[in-house]
Amino acid sequence: MIKGFNDILDLAKKKGPRTLSVAVAQDKEVLQAVKKAKEEEIANSILVGDKDEIENIAKTIDMDLNKFEIIDIKDKKEASLKAVELVSSGKADLVMKGIVDTSIILKSVLDKEVGLKTGNLLSHVVAFDLPTYHKILLVTDAAMNIDPDLDAKKKIIENANLVAHSLDIDEPKVAVICAKEKVNPKMPATVDAAELTKMNENGEITNCIVKGPFALDNAISKEAAEHKGIEHTVAGDADMLLMPDIEAGNILYKALVFLAKSSIAGVIVGAKAPVVLTSRADDDEAKFNSIALGVLMASKMKEEN
Image (cartoon, rainbow, N blue to C red):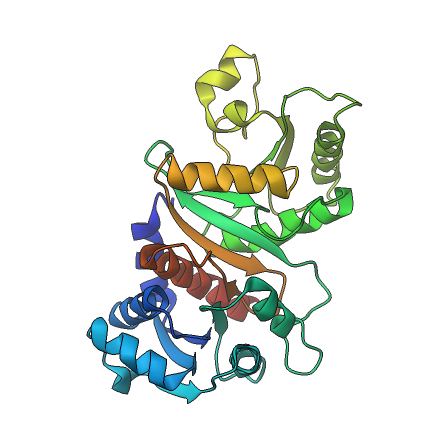
């Protein structure tokens, strides 16, 4: 069982190294993460961006740039397109967002000529290593889909399954999170949760166990579930939390990071290759963890193709 990011790193060392393309790489935390990924032998990186700025930052963190290929492109949009093109052309296995707006890197990912578009829904998955939980906890979607309908939620689960499977979780336990654990017609999220549970039982959603609606406490606490008389394999032991909308997902994300001091890793799923995506405010540890998770995903996708 993957209990924390140390386990993820150990697995990434076995699966790697993979080639990472970094879009707009001139950022201290990004370069620190890339440097560590090289040292840990999980990823070789191609740095796309302003070469002068990259070199200046590298000097401050004692980074030997002779170990990295640098493609000098000053314009952030052009650099993002080039970083994505390196993946679509097979020169890299995954792409990472550097110091650039998410909208710009996503536009490049979806570019008709050099992008990684598959026709699938794109969604965000974040992995949390919490001191208060007994294993890695996946949360989706906290960054991409604003108010997903039933079909979108089904696709978000299917996307997140790839992340879970890359962590060697063969049948992830998916808790569909709502404000309460009973279906209420006035609360559409609870209705969707019940439908997703049925879809899983009917074989429309496979390779996981889906159950809902769950209030958050019943999904992650055996004691809370038992107190409310909830008996199910997912209760208190969820591998993945499907959030009802981006508001709930983003609030939980920020609460776990800033109040619970959780370590995190974030990726976008649904493209032809993993997109390593964290907030510009995230530290180098979060970015390194995200690279490790992306390496595992890229390896899993190679195995399945």
